[in-house]
Image (tube, rainbow, N blue to C red; front, side, top):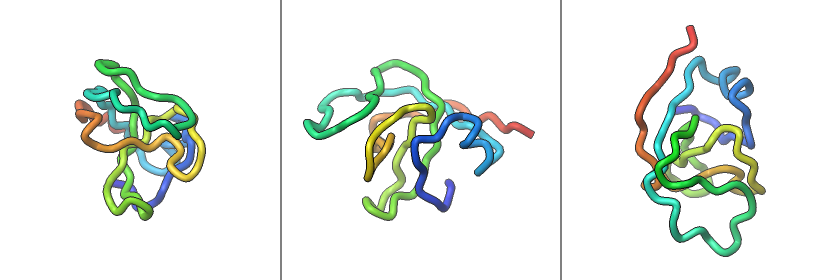
Length: 91
């Protein structure tokens, strides 16, 4: 896990912080919060992600790389919504 909060990162930007990309499948796309502004995952789809400890929430959140969302959570989602499937090291 990274030790920093992330913004709306692209794949290229994410690999500057860590030499790997995690991939996870969305398990739960339901109950989108009424005030969520930005991209929302689709159940069953595979996404490149970064898991980051959230200082605001106090838990690790899943950030979908390439998604756009507004502050304070940007593209962060609860970990129960995703299943980590693969880590690809880029070295």
